[in-house]
Image (cartoon, rainbow, N blue to C red):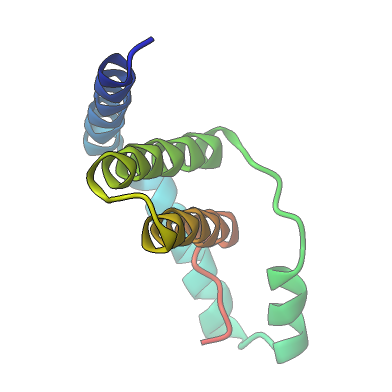
Length: 118
């Protein structure tokens, strides 16, 4: 498979995901956010509870799995753009490394559903 074909397939997946997300009802997301807000309003979590949640394994479900895949596909596309347009060297390597870090942080945001210490 040529790089161009691979890139086109990745773009098609991203476009498909965008359409899916635009058409998807926000009811599940809103319900999850309301439950989180209601819990927060009723009682503020202690630092120990927050830290325990941050360092707990959050198993994927169909919704989060799809979101992880979307983030990875977009990052893969960006990595190919960097690879093809930046000259070989430490900066190109660092850019791709930081992109991988970005994906990992985005995946953590998805898994934790926005929970953080701040």
